[in-house]
Structure formats: structure tokens, C-alpha cells
Length: 196
Image (tube, rainbow, N blue to C red; front, side):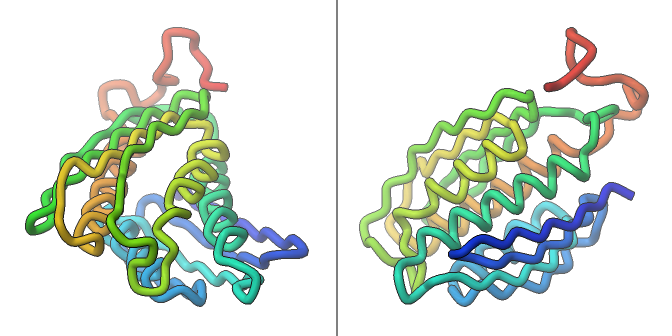
């Protein structure tokens, strides 16, 4: 089973995360930011990942530390659970329509952390979540999974729908990238023979 547990404690946050890549989309998420919980639950459901996440942070200061550290912990969990990446597709992408919105997310679990992010929102806050910090969440994830992650909000009127389309596409893209290729089940998906 491809699973991982990450415990991250700093002076600003405390995060406990359990991940099963080969799950059923079951999640229990409590970050103290309701809309972030909703987005991570959507990610888990559409990726068919089982995630248990408890996060506490200095929200009285700002959401930045907590949101970024959730991305860091999630990236570390996938990094650990995927081990040497043997047999996986490595890359995944999805185009997700959410009512009037459209999002594209592409992932390459390449060993080279890069974030390409173009997702403008019309409001600073979606529910309680500071939308400006979604960049930091995805950057923390990409850096700690050591992956190239491209996030695009192509169109949309409603910021809730745009964000939800992004996280659903993110789940689907990660599901594709993490899935095993039965024809190459013993192989590292790289011409170099290693992903570092």
C-alpha cells in the first residue's frame, strides 16, 4: 500500500496528515478554514485518495503559514508514498468544467520542482480562504513532491467555481500521474533510470 504519515510542527503550525494513494476518496479534513477544507475534500474525492488532515496555525496573525504548510505536508506525503516512483505514469493532466468555469491542471512527478500558476480571482477571499494564498499552497506542494505542477483557471465568473474546478482537476491529474502503468510496472518512468 502506498501510504504516508507526515507530522509537521513549527512555531507557527502543527499539522498531522495521513495519506493513502490507493484509496476511495474518503477524507477527514480540519484546518480551521472552512473553504480550504472543502477544496481539499474535493481533491481527495476526485483523486480517490484517502486523506486525514488536522492542521492548526497562527490564524490570528494570518492564514499564510497554515495554507503554505498544508501544501508542504501534502507534497511530502505524496513524495514518501510514491517512493522511487517505480511503475507510475509520472504525468497527468485534466481539464475540469465547473458550471461556467474551466480549469486545467497538469503534473509531472519529475524530480524537478516547478510551479506554473495562472489563476486570477476577482475577490481576495472565497468564503474564509485568502485566495492569494493558493499559489503558496501549490508551490509548497510542488517543491516537496519535487514535481512540475501547472495550474490554470481558463475562465469563470464565480470564484468559488473557479477554485473548485482547480482542485477537482488537481485531484484527477494527480490520480493519473500516480496510477500504475501495467506495461511498465517494474520500470522507473525516466530515460535516466532514476527520478531525483
